[in-house]
Image 1 (cartoon, rainbow, N blue to C red):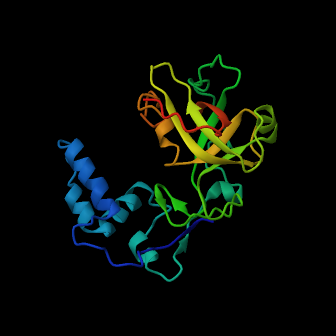
Image 2 (cartoon, one colour):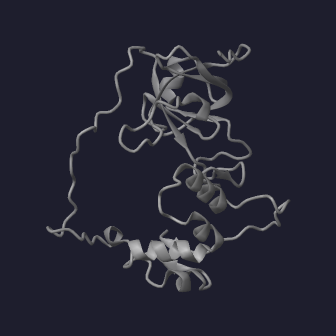
Length: 235
């Protein structure tokens, strides 16, 4: 949509000791990066200062950021590719192949599926505003496993059945979550989708991108089976 607008909470904080998301993030940065040379308290005290820094990094996109954000309705964020404008030397879109593109090691188990964790429509990052997801036709709940119908039939799973999901890692620890209801979805065979943080327990801390450290939460090797017995929580 490319619209940038200000937002604020509707409720008063339940306590003066409740911190804002920005204060929490800046506090973590201050504690873990004591020698960064960045005054994290300075940014947590005034969000305009954060927007000033964003403007310095992207001056063409966020010119007069603090002034524009205060306009009713916000402002439109230019997106050249949306207008078929490519700011490259050739004037065209350039696609690059880089090392590391084949980063999913093979898993010998033929029943393995690749789990991609998802956000719902009413979710921003880890903040969940409602239990609805109009993007995917889900209302009133988040314990959902989106599956290809071929994969469901191969496992004897029907729409609405409860399933449990177990991640596959050779570290001697079992990671299982259960109570998810299966929903057919237009997703590639061999893959499933489910919301996070509901499926965070399936991802080992060690499973991440080598360079950035970003958790590899879009390609978790898992097994999916009917959840007809009491959940085996492993260790």
